[in-house]
Image 1: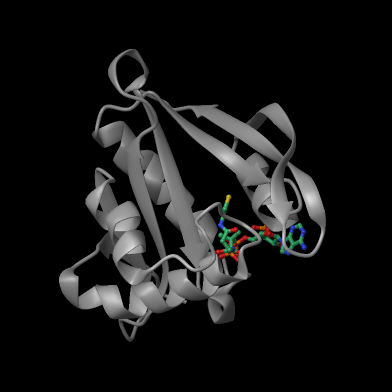
Image 2 (image 1 turned 135 degrees about the vertical axis):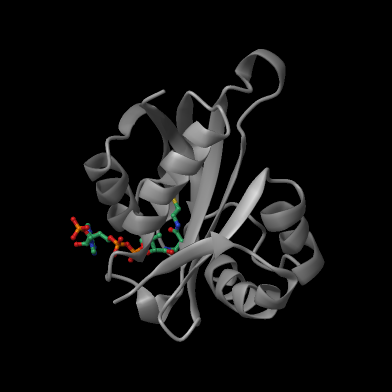
Length: 165
Ligand SMILES: CC(C)(COP(=O)(O)OP(=O)(O)OC[C@H]1O[C@@H](n2cnc3c(N)ncnc32)[C@H](O)[C@@H]1OP(=O)(O)O)[C@@H](O)C(=O)NCCC(=O)NCCS
């Protein structure tokens, strides 16, 4: 599959929102409220971050999206944070791996020295395994910090990777 990763444009938003809405409404991987409005998610996914991207197939169909933003202000602003979502129908084909590799290169270009994921739900085994394979270490475990819609209170993981600068 030929994958293109590019900056999001206004025209990309409706398809991107469909993917995000389906993911966040499920409520099992992110802490966005399950009934978040389109406006709230657009603000969090596009307006607040430093940059937002979409991953598209050869027909320019959007398969995934991610953002990059500083994880903290001031003395913590050299560490970035990213969020990644892949459309359900496109999962398991390497889209997230490609976006994460892309995000690391973009982050280095923006001057970030490390990348931190603040809240990887421990039951999200696919994500945890993928991030570990891409060099992220589990540096913290927050006991029972996430209320999973089916599994109850489960741990959340803090994951961190120093970037080659
Ligand atoms: C997590 C997510 C981003 C992964 O996207 P993806 O495009 O399917 O990921 P990839 O295809 O690049 O990689 C998936 C990897 O997980 C592995 N995998 C698949 N199912 C798995 C499972 N149940 N347990 C462990 N690993 C699994 C695949 O083998 C693959 O590993 P490989 O690259 O070594 O072959 C996607 O499932 C998603 O958007 N989920 C909802 C939102 C989310 O959880 N975002 C991340 C929050 S931290």
